[in-house]
Length: 106
Image (cartoon, rainbow, N blue to C red):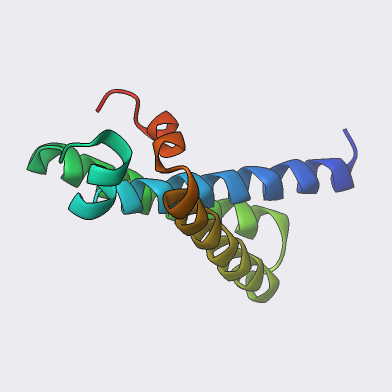
């Protein structure tokens, strides 16, 4: 695999980790959980979802750092996190049940 292809796959994985992280953070909030599952998860489940969200965002940063030098990686990470947050926000506004795929065990 070429270096460019590897970088592309790592950046795609970083963006997917950002989307998952932002989604988990969103559904850990009672209002958004109500939209997604029509019920509020337990406090232990909300805590787990918050930890998964933080882990997803940190994983995205690590993947970005694996691709580029620190100053560019942080810029790409912030941009991908912003795009992921917008995607999750629009999904919550349009089809909130689609976010069930992030936590099917709830």
